[in-house]
Amino acid sequence: MIAHAVLALVVLAAPGALPTVALAGLRPGTVFLVPLTGSVVAAVAATLEVVLPGSFLLWFLVVGLAATAVAAPWALKTVAGTFGHRHTWEPGVVSSVLWALVTVLVMAAAVAWPLQVLRIPIIGYDGYAIWTSHAMLVYGGHHTLLTGLSDPFYYQLTDYPPLVPAAGALSFVTSGGVDLRLAVDLTALLTAAALGALGCGLASVVSVGRGPVHRVTGIAAGAAVCLVGFGLGGSYAVSGYADLLWSAAAEAAVVFGLLAPRSPRNLGATAILVAVASLSKNEGFVTAIMVIIIVVLRYVPLRPLLARFPFAAADDPGLVLATLRRSTVRAWLRRAVLGAAMVAPGALWAATAKSEGLTDVLLGGTSTQTVGQRIGPTMSALAHNLHVLPVAAAVAVAGAVALRPQRARLGLGCGAWPWLVVSGSIAALIATYVLGAIEIHWWLSTSITRTTTFAQLALYTELASWMLVATTGMPPGAHAVGRNATRPSLLSSSRHPHAEDKGPATRTPERAGLARVH
Amino acid sequence: MLTAVIVAGASAVVLVAAVHSSTATTASLGTHAEQVGFTASYAQAECLRAEVRGLVPRGATVYLGSGSTAQSQVLSRSVTLWAVPTPDPRQAEWTLTLDNEGGCSGVRIFAARDR
Image (cartoon, rainbow over all chains, first blue to last red):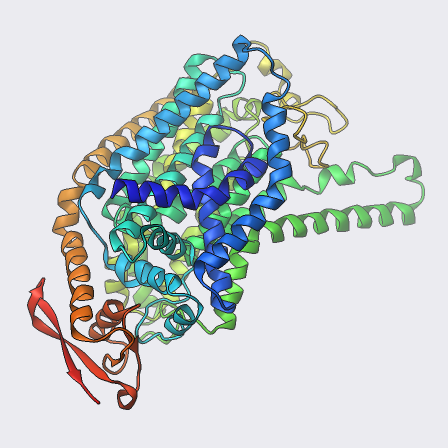
């Protein structure tokens, strides 16, 4: 069984290798991102299988080869940029490679230990009723898939995104037939990969230009969040459910896109992770959109474009207004392009589901309970599952008041952004429960521990990030520099000390026309 | 400095407690999965899928009952990729029902030939 699961994972990861290197570069997190990118390829293939004739394997090969062909030049350039100019094993290079290796091994150990339970064959209710059932339909080819998804009497929640079913279908392809256990195992492995990516992202926050103690603290914090993630998921993490998978991917996207210093590599990792979240579950799509909006605002702010204001022509109000309008329009266009590129995989499935009339029984119909009758139990269940919220909020407020210079020195994003995502996801959750049609007490009892996984994981990650900020310390004289140290001049050409993009193949945010504010 | 110690300390304590509780949860996953029926669910799913293969020929058109009931959904999952479900009993070659007594964790599939 282990051999079959490893083979399925390798085949799934194969088309993800070059696109991941091209987007996210060579870093510890790449090891965990590769199978996730492969699962996005599989999900896009399953989406095409719904609308076009052909087998899943055919579309997986087509999409995989296309993604690999497009990514190959950039991936090779990245590899050459990383290793090409290093002819000798300099101490700094050896140290970086060793730390990367340690990071990967520790995260792999943290996410592998919970997978021991897979020695016994298990499957959860949704694991069979939704995910592996849909996987069988995907495996069956275009006609079987379309017929099955169009029949809400027999198959549940047919509008759910296809990433988990597609990965399951690929495991059936590699094993030569339907094997429910293998599909469940592959879902658990993808979940572990998402948590591993999250752990590596957190560790990378203090990995550049820091001493061994800080690096060890970063790796320990990343491993802790991996272990906590599996604890939050419980049995659902290993029995074929998609909740921890999308939650871990979305939170890893928050870490790479909103917490870590801005760089094209972090943006690339974020793009992969939001695609995974949005193609894993409907809640993941909603949360991914929130992450994408804030990431786009962070990476393409208006202010630097306004800084190109032609002061010499300030006497001419018409020219000033025209310049302002032009730069604003240009910024919004860039935001739209970046946002559209990141949301595309999830939106492709959403549009396909809509055009094929696939249904969501959770939101359809009318409830016999009033909003008042539904909101009380919903808030009570949320409070019961978000014990960590008050502590995380208190730490965040204390950190925001007292540790802003440390946070800025690390080049981290604004502390409010992760909270915006958490608040938005909780608000979406409340709206779904309150406006939904299913009897509220039963619905909450069967789902609230799973639907709050993202919020809980995000809050623990928030705590871990503030712990890293607080323990990183501040060098002598940093206080004297004050705010100016954290917000360098827009005209300055000096690079941020923690910008991760290095080597000739990469573009700095400045060169890419992206702003320097965090 | 004091705030940094408090923030780091509070965060570390909560994280360590969460790791402790999580590792305990994870260590008992096998037992828990058995308690909530995930091991039985797997055994039942594979048993019913095998049973269908002995009851109706591959590609047969089967009627699984009217409407979206728990029974029809269990049956639909069991016949997937083997038989073809139809909502119209007149088009079906076989009608499948679920009996509450049998060797698949307390249930079994009953097949009746329609034509």
